[in-house]
Image 1 (cartoon, helix red, strand yellow):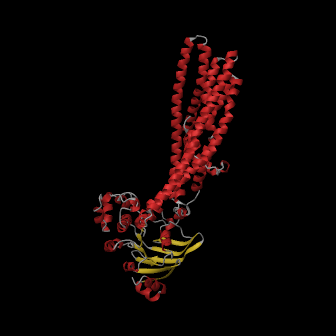
Image 2 (cartoon, helix red, strand yellow):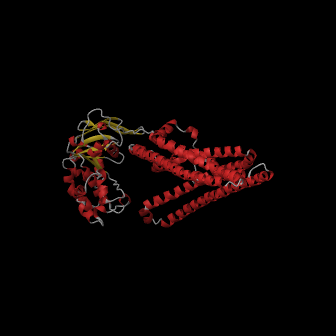
Image 3 (cartoon, helix red, strand yellow):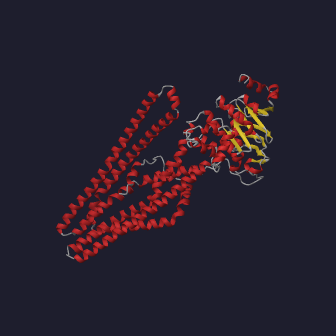
Length: 598
């Protein structure tokens, strides 16, 4: 056997999926990838046919050798037959290699192309796409569901044809040689099919249980390692260890159940083969003694019976392979069919290039809703080039939503957002994202070096530019003091750095892009006093000549702005200087007083 049978049995295909419900569009999507490799597929199929023929010839050569040459004492003929058998097995080796190589080549390229296209398609989806789906589900589509196609397209279909033709050929040859002996040999086939079906159903259930237990174990580990600080702070180590031990034991028991069932399979198959050979020996032996069957035929039947079980076992479980692959294909197509709600620029209207941007930001009658719940209402604002505008408001007022709209993570329901009079929907996303830089309050760093984190928004920047951006923010000094300087690994989510250090790196990342418009989501809210001083000293230089929208959580931030606006329940209530708003806006005064006159 090729080993695929064991994988089919243990893969645990999704029994809830019905192949008849597979969307035709999913098959059409798969065909677009398959047809690129039709030439190699034809070659792989041709090699498979040669392999099948050589497999079928082996026992028949034995029959000829015994009946026509050994029994007739024809040594010359026997020598020529041995040469022919050697050539046949050489052809088998050559064709088998190319069948496997071409099948794997086709399958891995198809799977790789689908995975890359799916990943790119998911990357183009708006933030709402990820809010509506669990991260684990998205990852499963890109990894597990694509892998579910791997066995099918990586030779699975070619192997299916090989099994089918081999089985048909064996049955036909055995019937042609001796009908009675063939029928006696087939007695064990129903037993094999029933055994494989019986064990297969229980093994799929057992291996599904293994996956579920392993998923629960992994989730528990991930959650507690991610929150290790809180775990230790609340003295949860003993409790968590006990829970982990229970989950680990459940996983162990599930694996034992699955392995126990799997251990029954091959001894049962071996028993069936031995019974089949015994029947051939018994009935064929009687035939030889009585002169009804030649010894060569009996020996050939031994070879064919041994070859009969592998394709028979594979074919009895082929539905599982197709079912799992169909379920994976259906889920992949479901994602591929999702059109991004935020469409790329179509070239209509006034286009604009980054180098021509002055930085005037205009929001005109903006309306936006989350799932039919209004969030932004008739929002109008004009920020001239170079102005530093602060937006204040209570939690839930809509400040973060505005940031998402400005960067086109979402599109407005109605109204327009314009840069220098050009609708941002007519700007290519790369130009827009390089025009507007965002420094979020909650900094996210990737598990790589300080240098690569700063360079993340501008991969082509050289080391001197990275260090210059860090130097502008007074970050160069602390980075140089790290164990490996700019090449220091920051750890997962920047765990090896302080909050202030991460914020400085985030600022440097945005500044390296050199945006004309800068959005600061309270960039100093999570830093210590010393680091805040460093940022504030550099802020005047950093903000010079840029249009800045500051999301102000603390009123001390307003010292950096020239004008402020009050956002409440998605509406811009008033705009003006700090003094004007204190005098004329009751809502602004309430927010100010709530912070203790900060």
